[in-house]
Figure (cartoon, rainbow, N blue to C red):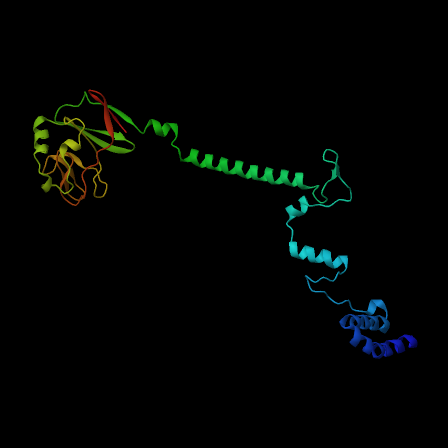
Length: 266
C-alpha cells in the first residue's frame, strides 16, 4: 500500500515532461493512472459523459438515456416488445427485424378500438335523429281534413288543429267585395284579401289573437269580423287587424282543397 502511494505521488512529477511533449493525451492517461493507484476501483467516481459525446459509457447508462429520450407510450412498447428468439423469414431468406413481434397484436387492438368508437358514434347519431323525429300518432294529428259542405253562407265554424282553434268562415259575396275594396294604406299589417284565401268564398285563419294569445269572438267588433275582448283588438272579415294593440293579422295556416268542398289543413 505504501509503495502504491509513493508511485502515485512520484508519477505526476515524472510524467510531467512527457505530458508536455506528448500533449493532452498523455496528461489524461497520467491522471487516470493516478486515480487508479489512489485507492480501490469501487472508490473511484466515474465521470458523467455529456449526451452526444463520442466517449462510450456503460450499457445501463445507454438504456436509461434511451428511455428518457423516447418516452414510449404503452402502445409503442407493446408493438416493440423484444424477444430472445431469432425469427427467420424463409420466403425472403433473411432474418426478421428484432423488436417487431408484437406489432400484429398492437394493430389489431388499435383497429378494433377505432371500429368500436366509430360504431358507438354512429349509434349515438341514429338515436338522436330518431328521438327528434315525430312519432306516428303525432304525424297522424298534424293534418286535419274538414268538410265544408255543412257550413252555411255567412256563418263561421271552429275546428281544433294541433291544439289550436281554427276559424273557417263561409263568406258572402258582399263580404268578399268589402274586403277587396280596403286600401292597403289603411292596414297596419298590409295584406291583400286575395293573398289570404285560396278560395275567396272560404276564409281559414288561426283563432289566436296576435297580441297576447287570446281567442277572439267571431262576428263581433267594429268591422263584423273578430273581436278580442282581452285588450280590444278588432279584425275585419278578412282577419286583418284594424284597431287595437294587436300588431299582426290573424295567421293563415297551410291548407289546400282536396275536393271542391273539402280542405286539408296542415
